[in-house]
Length: 247
Image 1: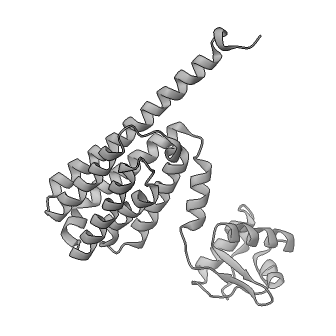
Image 2 (image 1 turned 90 degrees about the vertical axis):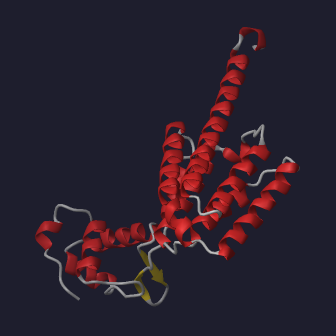
Image 3 (image 1 turned 90 degrees about the horizontal axis):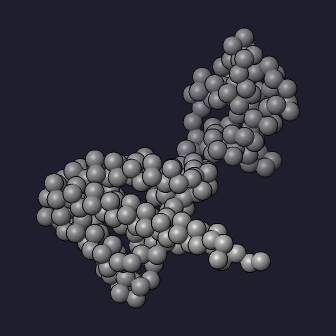
């Protein structure tokens, strides 16, 4: 293993020292790290600091400990980022708006490539999931699972793992942050029609139409969140009114 120059590492954390070691040695997924004690000596840090650094990097999916075997570099995954981002943003209304804007820009900007690459099988899958949306909308039931599947299917043809991971992150984070599952939707059939119109524009290879319909869909989401915010504010104001206070 290539030793790390200790001097510059005096001013960085044990975690960063360990990251530098992994990069400098070109370690890939499933590659083992040296034993903890030897690595601590090589990096010029205490064993306790090394142990904490390993735990921290495990928590973000960089490393994994195999009991009785050792510590290994882990294959990259968006899951830790997905979990932490969704949790961290769940109560921030400002970040809800920012998340929605990021999703809109990503999808509207990349829909042209989908139109160029999408297959008949992809379109059939999109139509099937929108039909499930329609059935649930008719029953006034939530179709969050179908909504999530729809947006993944829409870009599946691009075969871009990073894009799929980002879409997943922003979808789940937005859903949790906005409390969308608990928002009243006065027009579930309109939401279904939004998705159906996107599919049909893509199927017709209509790039401009697909962009317009995706953009309109996100404006609809913005309106839905705004309506529910107003209702919550009105309810809070009513509850705070002297007439409704208990003596």
